[in-house]
Length: 292
Image 1 (cartoon, rainbow, N blue to C red):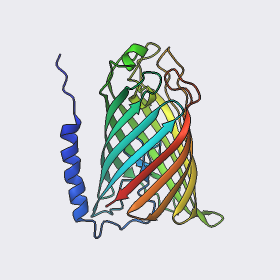
Image 2: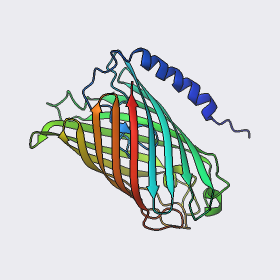
Image 3: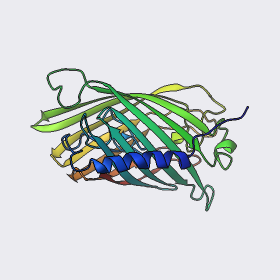
C-alpha cells in the first residue's frame, strides 16, 4: 500500500503565506493583552516551552491574523535539540503551525542527528482565559500534531520503535487569573494528550513494549512577577514504549521575558530524565520568538 506523507516542502509555503498575511495585518493585529499569545512550545504550538496551551499564536483578535516565528536551543548533558517554528493564528480561533527539529545524538552516535517535522493545528472551542474572570470555565482548545521522523532507520528502529510517523491529539485548558496572587497575574494550564511518541517522536513511535496510544498529562503554572516577566514550572508525562530504556517525565523551571508584543525570550532549566542510553539528562533551554 502506498503511503502519502505531508512533507515540509508543502507545509512551509502554506504557512509562509499565512505569515505574509499576518504581516499585512501587523499594524493592528496586536489587540490581545501581553502574554496571551504564550511563547512557542518545542513542537511549534503556542504555549510554554514543553506544553501547549489553549492560547492561539500571535496577538490577533477576532477579526485579525497574527503570526510568530521562533528558534529554540536545548543543550543537554549528552544531547542537543534545536527547533525552528512558524505559527499562524486566525481570528483568535484557529492556529496552524510547523516546526523542524534536529536532535544531535552526541556520543551515542557521534556526528549524527535525527530530524523531525511537526505539523500542528489547534482550535479554540470554548471560553476566554482572560475575559471570563467571573466564570470558572477556562479557555479550552483541541489540538493535533502530525510528526514525521526523517531518520527513523538511524536509531529509533534499532531501539525497537515501530513507526517513523505518528499523530498526537490533545485538549488544553488554560486560565489566566488577573491579580490572582499578591496582586500579580497567575496562569494555570492542564493538557491531556493521546500519544505513542517516544521522546516527542525523535525516537520514533510505538515500540516493543507497547504500540497503543496512551493518554498522558501535561501542565504549566506561571506567576507574572511584573507585567513583562513571568516565572513558572512545567511537567510533561511520557509514555513508555521501548524496552531498551525507561522513558521519564519532562520538567522545567522557566523565566519568560516579554519586553513587547513583538518579542518574547524564554530561558529554562530542563530535566528530561533518561534519553536513549543516557540517564539524568539536564540542560539549559533558550528560546526566542517574534510576533507579527
